[in-house]
Length: 108
Image (cartoon, rainbow, N blue to C red):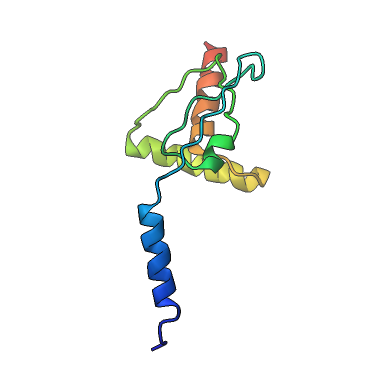
């Protein structure tokens, strides 16, 4: 096991830091004219997540969750695998379902 080095110095630095009062800096005040699109405060998030731009939401669509019976899902999954092999691009079950719904809407 290694011998501890500079333990006394570290202890004195920690004791000094514990007794030193914190320096509170005044928050920078930005006017609304300087930043036309201020980001909401992100408490508890990492700075990388705060800097990442938000993707613009598509207002012409609505999020939908479907729970289909297992045999129907397996059928769509098999079709998705066939399309993936045929096109060379990944095709999801969701894409197959949407295609079926769109085709049913045009045939009606």
